[in-house]
Length: 198
Ligand SMILES: [Zn+2]
Image (tube, rainbow, N blue to C red; front, side, top):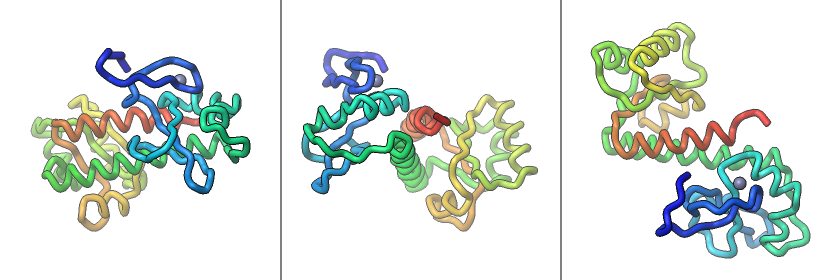
């Protein structure tokens, strides 16, 4: 989260620090006066920003900073639910990026395929494993990934992974190094921050 003078800066309403706008979460008010997470930073209207940090989101809710910044008196906000919604937005972004990786052939999938790749020194930027993967396969993949210093991301079901990758169920996939893999790794960091237990 380094600051460069050429990037527009915004202030987090939780901790009051100024950061690059692209490193912050943006929120807007819907026409129904509900707070929306504008994860792509594209929705029209006055925006409010927080760090990608549950502490800042929670603090902003507790101190009524969303009300103040959006100039509304009534805004029904549950801080835990808001953090959960943000995590869901980020997960959706990760799914979209995985779909893009599939379309541009940046991802391989299938337990055997990935395992063989890892064992024969194939370079992967990241391994994605389903939450409902069988223990035996998970153990093998874990060991092989650790040996090759490849991170593992585990947050989706095998059914969901299959849908994204255009297959039946899929428990294991691996990203080849590149911009998409980097973008996914970046989102995973955000997801991990927002989805940790409060
Ligand atoms: Zn902050």
